[in-house]
Image (cartoon, rainbow, N blue to C red; front, side):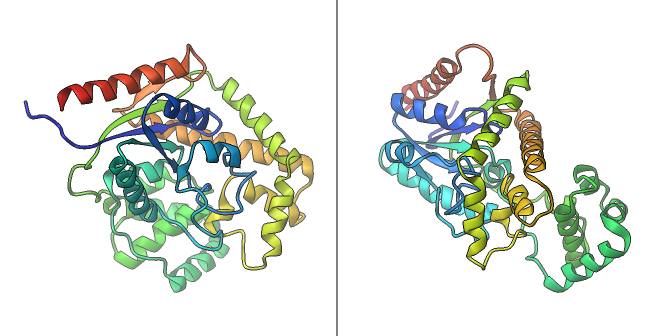
Amino acid sequence: MPVDRRPLAIFLMGPTASGKTALACALSERFPLGLISVDSALVYRGLDIGAAKPDPATLSRYPHALIDIRDPAEPYSAADFSVDAQVAMHRIADAGRVPLLVGGTGLYFRALQRGLSHLPDADAGVRAQLAQDAAAIGWDGMHRRLAECDPQAAARIKPGDAQRIQRALEVITLTGQPLSAQQQGGRGQPFPWRVLKLALVPQDRAPLHARIAQRFEDMLRHGLLDEVRALRRRGDLAPDLPALRAVGYRQAWEHLDGRYDAAELRDRGIFATRQLAKRQITWLRSELDARMLDPERGNLAAQARDAVGLFLGQSESCL
């Protein structure tokens, strides 16, 4: 049987507030690891409190690549991440360590490991027409239109998800092909890293929901609204930018626009974060080659150490 000589990498995945960062830092104390953030909000400078960015002391002791690498006015895509992550992974491997990629942005993990299909860029004219159509028939009507053109995409996209409905219809308009068919494309060659996937998936979500609520309340106490006020004062940012569509920031921006009061901000922020966690857990359960660890049961740190130690030890014995 041929020996797999690909370099090693570890994916540490989990929903928001599941303890990924603390676990990654603990593992890097025990093993020769280099940390890479896999988070679509942490890439942006100035998104600190609402993104639950590790504090400066933590980042000083446990450096993470791909944090604070973009201005909020600059979009950052999964394709951008795939390129940047591979550069960071090779840099870590060249230094004699194993890259550990930690985060909850499933699209980034998927883009890195499986590649992305080549979808067309956004077209302002098509988007304007779709927005006009949506104003006439509503996004529920646009979702029904999508279901007629691409039933598979419509089954995945909720009727209220205007952004994804618009993008799916835009791709169909520009290419004449269903989005779902085009998303079957991707990486044509095997991923050049041998990966251990660890997924933090709680069976009982009640403790996770309690942490989500407490963390959002802490964010508000620690200055989330001041952080968003500072972003608004720049004058070059708008709530439709990818950075500001992040959970927490969108709700804070709308609150500062006067759309609802502080109590509703809290409720909306917590609800949106719980919905994000639900989507993340659903995606994680589709990662059939991942080792599932329940952060609410047993000694999570010990289980993760055992898995990483076995992965690294077995690999060394095969070389």
